[in-house]
Length: 186
Image (cartoon, rainbow, N blue to C red; front, side):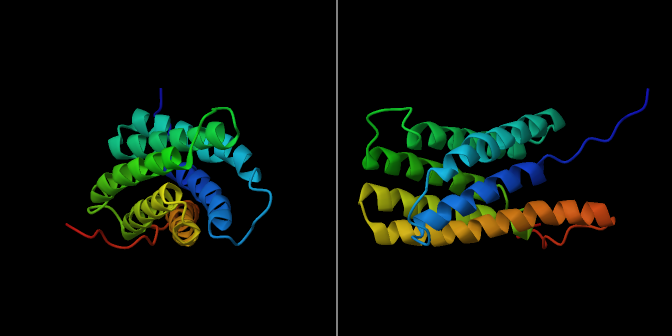
C-alpha cells in the first residue's frame, strides 16, 4: 500500500471565504444596491459548505488552527444564509450587530494565532476582525457610514484571502514556494 498525497484544503476554504466576502462586501460598501439575495447561494454553498469541508479536511490533517477557522467561518456563512434568507424570524439589527461583534472577537483571538504564520494569513485575519467590528457597530447603531467602511475593509479582506489561498495553488502547480511573506514573529 502506498501513501497518497492529500491536497491542501486551505486554498478551497480561503477561496470560498474570499469570493463570498467580496460579493457581500460590495453591497455593504454601497457599491451595489440591488440584488443582495445573490449572496445567499454563495453563503450556503461556497462560503458555507466549502469552508465546512475544508475545516473537516484540516481536522483530518491535524491542523487545529485551520479546522477551527474554516469550520467557524463556514458556520458563519450558513448562519448568514439562514438569517438573511428569512428562514429565522425575529432577527433585529442589534442582534445581527451583536453576532458580528462576537465573530470580531473570535477573529481577533484567531489573528494572534497568525503571528508565526505568513504575512498573507496575518493580513487576512487583521482585516477580517476590523471588518466584523465595523459591520457589527454599523448594525447595532444603524449607521450606514460604519457599514460602508466595513464593506470596503471587507473587500480588502477578500483580496488578501484570495491572494493567500490562490498563491498556494499557483505556486504548487509551478513547483515553487508561495510568495506569502515571512512570519511576523519567529
